[in-house]
Length: 391
Ligand code: GLY
Picture 1 (tube, rainbow, N blue to C red):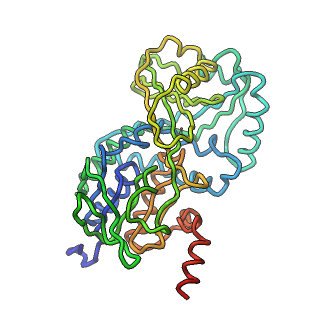
Picture 2: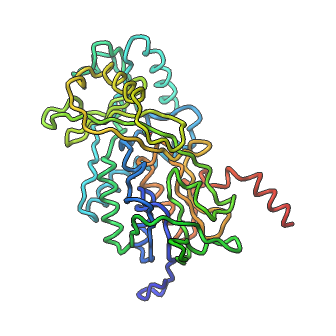
């Protein structure tokens, strides 16, 4: 597609999947003058993006082995306030950015040593987090259980309302002139001569200069993808339950973590308790054991939940790659670009993913921040073999 005002050529894009990545990248590309069609087999943003809790927890969620991912997480976290403000201005939807911070608590004296180890590790990475006694934590959150014996406070780990985020991105995408095809499954990616030429939908070809694969946990299963363009992601099931607080008298204000649980308060009084981590494929069952463990772990640190009405329960599928890090940018198939594999960090990584992937599509530039997260890191031996065969 050509942009007549500037004379520049803008590529046409077919996006597979309308989660935060598909809608967000689609928004940026449509706003830049590209023709963008998003194909979604269900309703926009109703899978992992809807199931998430919206925590922006680059500090307290960092684990050993994630040092490289930390830089990307921190960059995205820093971009969030401006991103939220821009999106609200464009869409008219407030994404519920809250900056009270996050408390991680040791439920009992026995849990203190483990929490202290994690604290030392995260401090060793230069992260600005503070150690609190149980009493100091209770002064911040008076309903914490008396057994809470120590805590870590991260003032920089914030939250957004991920469902409002989906609503905002959808509105921004449509306002920018993008086309959203809901209830329209892609049959296959149309690839020939090692080039993606569009997608096949309902038996008909839809041509595009670029195909963006952003189908979350389903990204591996799209027909037509050559092996080197097939991102190795699998679904990692999470069960979640939400309760209803009085929004005028919320039980907590901070995001709260305890052993085996996180608890996220929303402004409307919703209290989200998540989440199980289960390697069970696309199993959509809520289980008594899963919900029981969430309630038990939450009750252990916040007994006040006992009186709260149950609001909703749901299952989501984290798109998890072989190394738990996202898969971003170009593939060895010309014109095929990926944005998937965000595992537990899809909401946190939204600003950097949307910026870096849309920039690559527009300018062909791979920003250094996403260079370590290309699909080629999984396929190096396959690529060498293909190259040898061609030599
Ligand atoms: N980021 C929260 C979760 O994956 O459960």
